[in-house]
Length: 354
Image 1: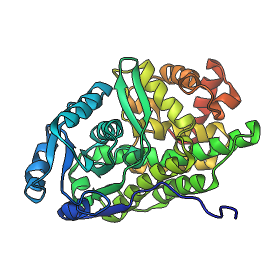
Image 2: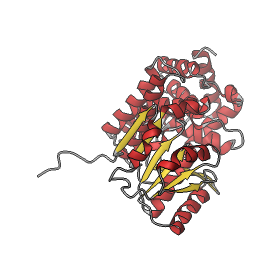
Image 3: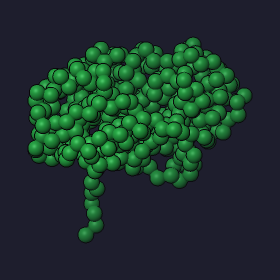
């Protein structure tokens, strides 16, 4: 008998709402996660300590581990510390993107499921099958199982610096450009598209793009959080980062590699990259609308707004394809030289009304 459906790797629990942290102990007690309460909880040294004080009384059998930062060494050290301390049912990453990525990698290393408890919405990695960690060569992406559960308390999200929410907005909106790059690769190179993954990622981006609310609005934060979770699941469905990573992320990586001391946030760079990539592909109205939405949320749409000159941005765009060998996007398709990029940027800046 033919297989008529497929299994989709996804969390068994997704809890996104104000006050979600108040019920975290109940989520973790789920038989599929930890019926014994033996948990390894990774936190940061700053805000993590405050959350530990709040949550520890309800989690008496948990062990708490302070994570130094977002490096590969930090993740390996966390895994080693968990091995030495004892046996656990699951790992909980409680914090921002760096803490969750460290916890993801460590959980995979010791063979335990991960629960992601996000305290900000800076990017779509909170539910993805990828851990992004700094290493000796710069920054690497490591394949890991996607989280078994995701908890996002919107009250906590509102308390985080607004720049984190803005970064998440840029990352979510960049899905729209990434899917267009995937479709381009299908037309030009015969690359297979996973229709379900593409639909999930595109709709996640479109929901954020079209929402009338702002960074202080619970309704908007709900849509943004759900969009970032859906994007992570889309990557699990496709088995790679294709649903959320195209020219926009190549430009982001180029900023990070060429100007590591000056780079802006992930989402700021991805949002700018997406708006410019949409212009390059001839979608001028969509590019202008995306730039308008980015501006409304306080995100940059020009390199000068994050401290880069036009010549530096041209250098970034020219270098960008080297960051993802084998990935086909509008940048590889057009194969522009520096003068052509400079001309295209001038057209873009004029079109978005700079």
